[in-house]
Each structure stands twice: as C-alpha cells, then as structure tokens.
Length: 222
Ligand code: SAM
Image (cartoon, rainbow, N blue to C red; front, side):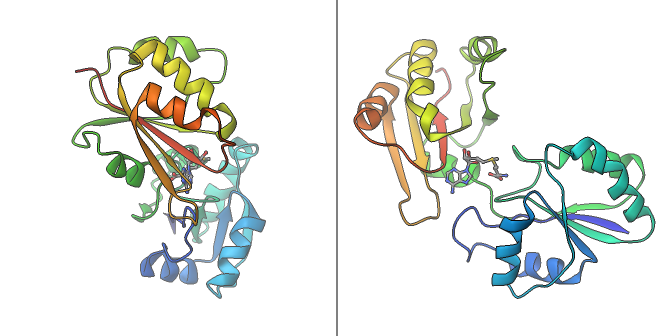
C-alpha cells in the first residue's frame, strides 16, 4: 500500500531519473493525467502497466476510488503530462486524502519547470514565491495588487498567447524597469531565456509569434 508521485520530463525525455523508471516498473498501476501522453513516455521506457485516467475534471470523484485501491494493498504511481504532479497539476487532493487515511505517500524528486527557470533567470533564488497560473479574470487584479509589495522573486506559469498582456500588467503593477526573465521551451530544441527589464522583454517579444511553454520570473521589490 503506497502512493508514489513520479515526476516526468518537461520536454527532454532523458530527464527522467533511474529511480522514477524503477518505481514505474514496480507499481501495480499508473494514474495518468492523460493516458495517451503518458502512454508514449511509458512505451519509450519500455514499461507496460495498467494506465488509469486521473485528471483535473474527475479528480474529486476519482480520489475515493483510488484510496480504496490503495487500502486494498495496491501500490500506485501518479504522473502528470509533464513535470511534478501537484505542481499546477492534479495531485494535491489525492495526497491529502491518502494522508488522512494513513496511506504512505512518497514524491520522488525530479523535473519541474519552475526550478530551472528560476535558476536560469539570474534573479535571487534564495527566497522566492511560486505563483503558478494567475487567475484569468476574477481575482487577477487582487492577486497582482497583493504581489506589488512582494520582496521575493516571483515565479509564474503562463501560456504563450497571454504572455504580452501579462507582462504589460506586470509593468503596470511592478514598474517597467523591474528585472525579470521569460524562459520558453525549457529542455527542448528551441529553449530560450530572455532577461531584462519588463519593458525590454515586452519589446523583445512584441513583434514575434510566441510559441511553446513559458515561465516568467520577476524580481521582488527592493
Ligand atoms: N507539473 C508541471 C511542473 O512541474 O512544472 C507544470 C504543469 S502546468 C499544467 C504547465 C505549465 O508549466 C506550462 O504552461 C508552462 O508554464 C510550464 N512548463 C511546463 N513545461 C515547460 C517547459 N518545458 N518550458 C517552460 N515552461 C514549462
């Protein structure tokens, strides 16, 4: 009886640990955010295991079923499409319910997008706050005004089509001269990190078609 949370690559398939592979080989079944995406990774790793769907749309209903399987003695692994489960991905509800039921939980260390983005940014990494995705509408302005006084480096996940709008809102709240970085397509073929003031980064991306996955880091208030 045990739940493993197993981080998977955020792009480069070589970024999976030996232990992650061994755990995925040893469990009774794998819970996946998207069984097709994880199926491709498992095929690449030559791992053949029962794959069950576990995504944000069915998380509340599925939790009790998964807990029952664990209590029956099964050992399961939860993976997300990329990176570490429960980091801007499903997982938290299941971990909390397992702990309530005294089911052992172990999260393996491994890939997650915000750590390389923070370290690559060149911004202070001794203290930081991970903000994940900002709310799209309701609560967005409140969150931004709360962050106006934040002194730690702030890390955000963002989609490419919202990047410019978000950077412009950041420039309005934090000031256009605030140092920041945008990391795109980490570990992939077209990986790039753009560093500078918020205004410089807006100018860099303004006339480009922005594609891929993105992490924004913004220095805290000095
Ligand atoms: N669980 C993942 C993790 O541990 O980082 C995050 C999943 S979240 C649904 C997806 C977001 O993570 C993307 O929109 C992007 O902001 C960020 N992300 C994931 N992979 C990335 C990559 N290779 N480069 C840059 N950002 C990435």
